[in-house]
Length: 483
Ligand code: HEM
Image 1: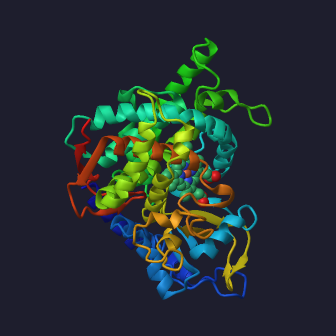
Image 2 (image 1 turned 60 degrees about the vertical axis):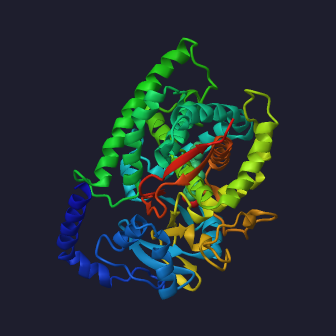
Image 3 (image 1 turned 180 degrees about the vertical axis):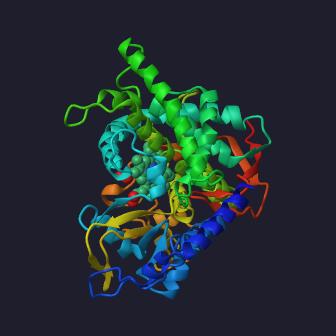
């Protein structure tokens, strides 16, 4: 019903706008002062451009189709389009990635669609999500530095054990995706804001789903649209976070909470270069961003690990062997530690192959800071530029026989530079990469230590919105190992 309403409103919206003079003006207006040609491509319908094709190839489970159709039609290096309300160039291949990742803050800067800015309005300052992201980056190293990460391994393992006991133990069938989300979200709630209560974790889960699916959407703020639901959900979560923050302030004042216990304490007690502290709403926004970034991405990866290990018994055997050697080296009740993680080499190669074939984020945007040339084409100032993980991950020039699941691609020196980019690259590379590696490996350890499993729906469809997930949540039948 909701999606019907959405499509109807969208059609109406397209119809009305296509009557406008804007269309005529827009179609004929030269976009660059430069005499060099713009990249080849088309800009689709007025206003919404090619957004529907861009998004709907994902909804149908093949986001790479949008890219590869245009690569074969126009150019293998760069093509032009119009998506999410913006004129854009899509840079393809390892060279495109290298160019963008090496020119951050020189020719390009990070940019998020306006839907993101509206779902995450900067509460007090009038700055954009980009400026807020820069502040966030400054804040994160303390929380994600190696010494801190080492401490998290045991916490993650403890939560994983509780999670598998509570939600997988004594069950013959489970739905993977909601449980993977519960796992990563529980860890994030514990490490970011010291919330451990499973009931509170569950209470947040639904609004987070709405938020994630509306984040990269067409920004139409009308009841029923994913965008509208995302804004409502983000307001709800923000209010809940503010009450957690208020309580923490009291606890810090009374000595009941510590300055180093999590990122929330850190944010409350750290001032900027002018000695100014962030207010409650700003902190709530930052935590909200981290919970989104650190939750759905990793849970999508965990879900696809369950999927591929069910489909590929020989890969399961390799992971099982490695993890059981580690499990058998531990004393009863001893939690995983940093050294154990370093031994999980084959498991991480498997996880990387999963991230290659099903990257949780399909790509990201940049904005051109000035007019510049790329591969003989002019990129005008202000244009948005999109890099797509699939343009290398599924490209036979970068990964021979790209659809084949082959973890040995990551042995030795691994894939060529700028070809394997699930976490992006350059100065804006995902700051949560190592944290994600830990939680994924701890998940794999606890999973294979306890179970084998098989898929209940053999050909379950994949939907990418905006993260890839199996359409029915990947139900599996569990076979616990004999004690
Ligand atoms: C498998 C899990 C993850 C994947 C695949 C992933 C991937 C990415 C990608 C592709 C970007 C965009 C880079 C770009 O703009 O070029 C990004 C940005 C970001 N990620 Fe992650 N991420 C994951 C987990 C995490 C976690 C666990 C956290 C937090 C603890 C996190 C926090 C962030 C933040 C804050 C940014 C924005 C950085 C900036 O704009 O400078 N991510 N991530």
